[in-house]
Length: 248
Image (cartoon, rainbow, N blue to C red; front, side, top):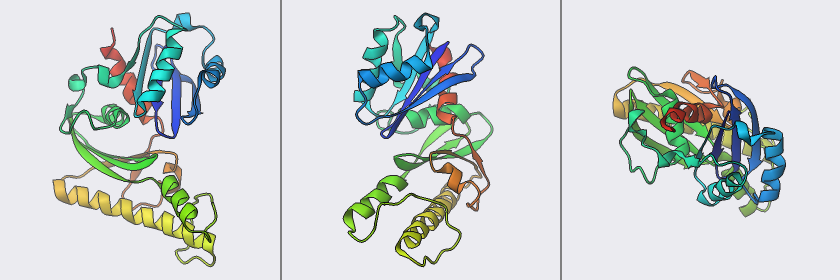
C-alpha cells in the first residue's frame, strides 16, 4: 500500500493507494489548525496497519504542514516520507520555469498528463485559480489568478452591505438583488477570465490545447466555458502515482 498526499493552503487530501495504483480510500482535512490529534483521528479511518505501507509521497505548498505530517508518520512507520521536490523529476518532464518557485502540486498535475504528443492547459480552482501550460513533454509555466473563495470572502469582509454567501452557478447575468448580483459577477466574471486566458495562451504559443479542470469549483464551470473541458479531481494524486516509480 502507498500513502499519497496533496497539501494545499486550504485543504489537505491524503489517499491510500493499492499496488494496482487504485485509490482505495481518502481523507480530506482542513489545512488550517491541523494538529496531531486531528491527524491521529483521521488516519485511523485511512489505514489500520502501517506495516502494509511501502512508500509515502506528498506534494506540498505548505512546508509547516508537511513537516507536521512527516513527524506524525515517522512515529507510525519507518518508511521515509518524501516530498516530490526531493526527487529528480527530469525523467518525467522538462521544466522551463524557476524550479524553486513553482508549486509541487502544479508539477504533479503536469506530470499526470505529460506525454510526447499532446498539449494541455490545466486549470485548478484552488486557493488561487491557476493555469499550467504543458506542451508535449515540457512544462512551460502558467498563470496565477485570484482564487474564487478568497476573493468572495474579501469582498464581503470589506463591503459592509455585502453578506457572506455561498458561491453558485447562476443562469442570468443581471442580478435582481445583492446576492444574485454578486454571484453573477463572480460566476460570469470567472467564465470570461478563463476563456480569455485560454485564448491568450493559444495565441501566444500558436498551439492548440486540451483543457483539463480540477479543484473544488470545477463542477460549476465544466459546462459553461467556450473550450471543451475534461474534469479530473484526482489529477494531483495521479501525478504522484506516476512519480512513485522514482522511489526505491
